[in-house]
Length: 132
Length: 132
DNA sequence: GAGTAGTTTATAATGATTCTAAAAAAGTGT
DNA sequence: ACACTTTTTTAGAATCATTATAAACTACTC
Image (cartoon, rainbow over the protein chains, first blue to last red):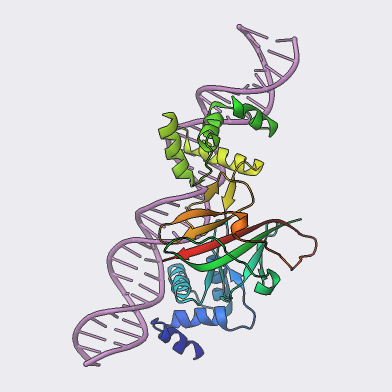
């Protein structure tokens, strides 16, 4: 399986559940945004297999820590994740409650002029809220 | 009182609780960031007066809707608000879990080149995550 | 295969937020 | 000021996403 190596390389054992979640998350050209519950539904449909909610949470967090997933900073009751871990930004359509990717080239360079002593920048994320 | 007008102008009755919350939020030169629980503590200390948690929630949301407060898009278990409603951005110190203001001039102009049909941009918010 | 360390699971616990419905306060007209 | 309506406050209950628990299970090592 193509994900076994990937998991092993980051110290995660390639379990049946993790491989199934990998299939759902990464076995597609298109990247996508999801909440934990949307992912659980997708797993159930796509694999005809129920993975415990706790495992879905654990796995998503493990993947996030390893850089396979990114959490999107947004004010919502549920956490949103992105399978696109490249450097990019988001529109958030307030009415539809949907995220839309904004490629880095759609935003132009962002220059953070202020420096904080002893801290370095880990990420720069832009959220563009849309209304009608 | 200086806040009565402000509240009335936006259709909010100037109740004792709302005026007290105004004092805590706006009777200072410095703007600040807070969670609902931090605000509740501050109210208790500063006014020697307990306002029901439900009222704090209601009032903060009413103020947010009227544009007196802004919610900061961030992934945290608690919602963060800002008394600074001017156009500006934030550092988020991941270790200290603290927000730091970034003036618009500290970031430089941001140009959103992509357009979405029928939607207009309501806000552009930049979150810069800091690590050691 | 035996031993151990990591993982999954159902369920319980937690904690932020929202809901509820009754009491209190504010607004309005007389 | 008084009667009446509407809004607000309140304590407590309900909700819902997320995290913790601890027992059963699986993967890995030797």
